[in-house]
Length: 358
Image (cartoon, rainbow, N blue to C red):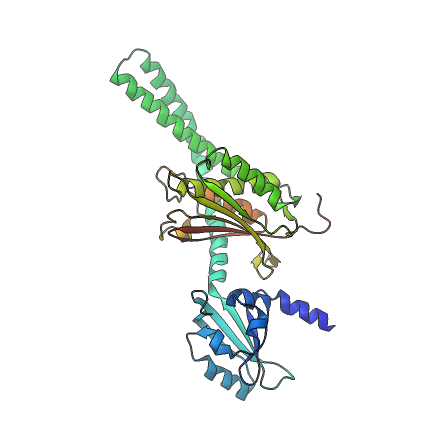
């Protein structure tokens, strides 16, 4: 195999990787490592590794042992940071490099990513069970609700004053429940995506224009786009629904006097997701929808994509569950980080294959 193949392999590794020399100085770092460190390879090469990579474990001793014994070493669940960002729990692997005496390869496996992806797979199973039950209940409940609504309307014909207000309340609440049940049925009956090569920015532009004249009219929406992004492989209508749901979520979380929503796109080649068949696929196209609202309740951040989980009064809890369902069916990944003043919903999508229909 040619050197270029191994260069490509090194660049494509989805986890942060470092090569250190005999003096434990950084000799090389892959793109995922640059992203993890929030620094370029050029600025890191030649620096003592433990000056740049902060690990809550005595890894200098571990490196000495690996060099001495010429064997691999695994250190699980330690905090690793760069000083630029909060530390992340990682599994760390150390091993020698053949034909390079003294050189050590360090691989970091951030447990946060593994945990989120594992949780995402569990959420899909839970969602299927919950929605299956909800669909059955929706069908059974709508018929008696229609009877209740009709009876209340008939009663109102012979009433007046406060009594009419009560029958009007029965009709209004019954219709609200029917509307919720319609959403449940729509969620369960979502057709499989009709995927083709589409431009993410075209869809974001449609979503933004719709939001700006509707539910997000009180918000300032700004763009921070990477115009060089290639096409993704998606159902344009379903992706539009995803972006509209996330924009609506951000707008409803904001103060009534307004706020700012930022739409950001960029390319991150290191991220991979696991498909149902066990294979891994790259999802380098990143879309972030960022708002400066109060943030999600801390106890909901890990469950916000579950059906019927909502942090808002009278919320149905289906909007974000629908987002998760659509993105997973596009072989993508959706995640959220939230703190007061900054909530980021991030969608990661694949690049369209070269032979995809336009």
